[in-house]
Image 1 (cartoon, one colour):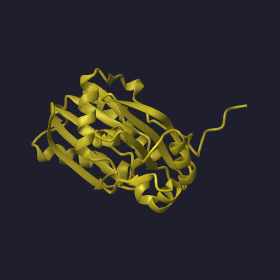
Image 2 (cartoon, rainbow, N blue to C red):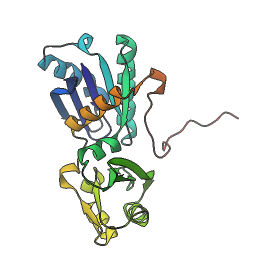
Image 3 (tube, rainbow, N blue to C red):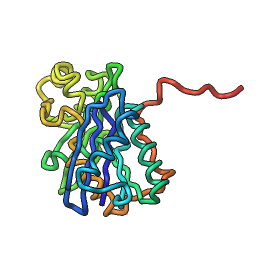
Image 4 (cartoon, one colour):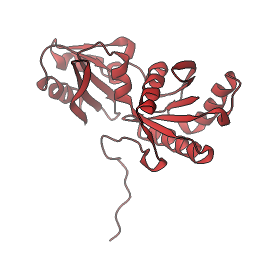
Length: 229
């Protein structure tokens, strides 16, 4: 039994399944409230299937990029459950989930709202049936990010992610006819795709130790602890 957790955006997304069979999903609007709602949501999801935490064999979580606080809550919770249950854990990137939602697209740019007017970008290209990360993750203003994406490729680009909901006009205008937004993937991560990516990662040997499960931050935190001296 695999339990997947995503707190990278405004929603808490959960998925539960056995092998490749997805049994249940749950999405709860949790902006600024992930810490208060996550454990209760996990318990409720398991209860709908008449299960408890002891029935979970693999824990999986989205590592980001996304909300600093949300990611910290999700990753810390999964690491705590891993310690208590002594179960293997899997970590996946939000952009890999978005890419997996549209596997037929040859050229796909992810654009995730980074708050403070910025966006987390990256660009995938599919060739010979395999995906390549052409432009690694970076944070930028919508206009600057689109220009960097377009300068690294030719032709039209389909853009997906929460920034397509937050900054649609700015992204399209900066694209000058080459950027198309995907309305169906302009929100948080689809729980069913999250589950599929997590199960695939686990089957490839993607299970990690607790120490290697950390949030994936594209830019440094805005608050840091000063170094002594």
